[in-house]
Image 1: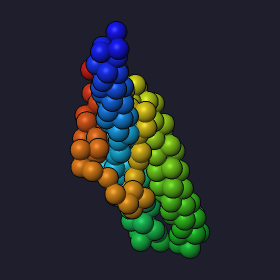
Image 2: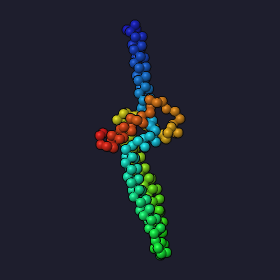
Image 3: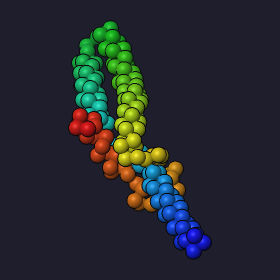
Image 4: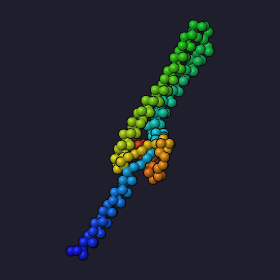
Amino acid sequence: MLKKFPLLLLLFILFISGFTILYFKNANNSIVYVDNYKLFEGFRMTKELKEAGEKELRFKKIQLDSLQFLLNKAADNTSRSAIMQQLINQKQAIEEFQSNYSQSNSEKIWERISNYTKDFAELKHYDLVIGSNGKEQLLYGKKDKDVTVLLLDYLNKRYEGFQ
């Protein structure tokens, strides 16, 4: 029995060592990072909303150009004054549209990205997904910890209904 004790002790130490190594190796793989800028700009929802906003903005600018044309052709001061007021109102509406559209859509996009990222992290068994803006907030990260491309692919497939 005493002769088997060192062998059992050695096996126990090897088992604990192996378990510890595997645990810490897997723990390291559970923390990843993404580039927020690339994620936001590469997300199809961002592109679609940006295109829709640009289309609406072009329409509003056409209306503004039409008012400018009418102002140039107006003969009397009364009609010029009325057109000028419409022109001012249209410029304000365009500025307000640009400000509100960008902000409200950014919030919607980040909410969607956040929800999809949670699902992605659970699927990949990540404990922590760190976001950075062009690596300004992340001082260092190994390239193999950057899952931006994987997450972006997942986001776009999920957005399109493929996952």
